[in-house]
Image (cartoon, rainbow, N blue to C red; front, side, top):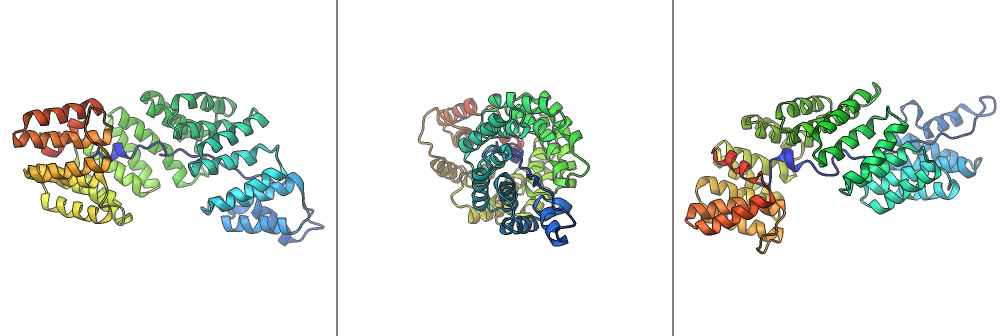
Length: 404
């Protein structure tokens, strides 16, 4: 197994988000001269009255089609329609709308902030950074410009570089909760766990009452991740359980399963993994993770059945192939274990030598165990030594698997 799911799920994209906002259409429609329908379209276009994305797009389209506005005001309508398309998941149409908005209102920072967010979510980080910087240049007090730029830097792995921008956003708006949340994530990556817990705690308190359940769950998940970094698994489970009560999304069940494993409660993993499989039956992750847990619990037939299903779904996954090797290792079938580890290392592109990443290390270590069990003491020691240099905690996983 690569690593407990609680660890693997901590990716740089986790909970990092760039914020977009509506532009207010800066003209008044007189109730004496405008129809109720016209006023409704304006309200929809600016997102009032809990307008759905479809209603926002409809309202903005009506305003654009009326040909009664121009310049920055018209740009605002395009900007808001772009946001509606983004909310629908249509990033290409959103970008087209933002480009038009910028051509109409080139000095409106919000245009660049919203386009930055879409670039960020589609992995075009250099463009996202450029747009966030442009917004800041136009308005040095643009909180969202600093926030978006910092969040993109975190996605790029530039956590320390992101901190000054998060600090600036918070200095400009001390009640802006998302900045605390994402600064916490940067600090988690930097292993400054106590500071991350402090930031996430502030973020939890600052979620508005009107926020969605997902909004309230997000900083709880972040603080859980910080507690996990401290190896305070009990508090990590407590926070993540609260997040699940608010927003039972699949990834949370997978992460909590990994936390239960790390906390020495593998039997509690199975209900969460069953739920993960129920919610994402076509993903190999739940099946592969349950294969590992069943192996740890000694349910080797069940483990092999789960690994077989995972292999059906992802035959080219080094993680799945190596996990099946782990089950063979526990069964004492060292030849088949080594064959699976060799295959998994080939998928990883490892051809030998002492330079390995964490994924390859998590395969080399059990291969070393299998070689040692077969009597190849030297070969086993070499594999395990290389693995532990790259991933110092790798041995702990196999102590749990093998019950040592």
